[in-house]
Image (cartoon, rainbow, N blue to C red):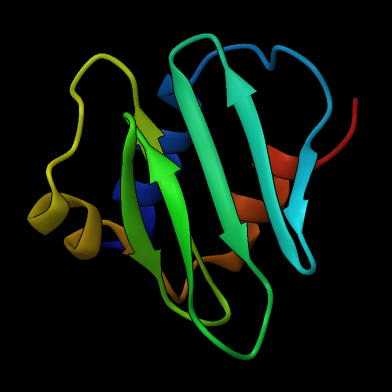
Length: 95
């Protein structure tokens, strides 16, 4: 996924439903009208709960999950945002 595609996906999330929440040390989630953003800012991987299933999230990475098209395990892994930290930071920014 290119940086441009990641920003397009982030824009499709719509309005935030509130501030981000912490899921544990160095792990964050923010919910939007059309999906969620998960960030793992830790140096080790952690599991996150997506659509009632535990999914691995690599260290220093994040994922954008669109609610209109639930992601499978394979799709979640391919959608991990490693190089576009700005897209994730923008999603987590407090308004």
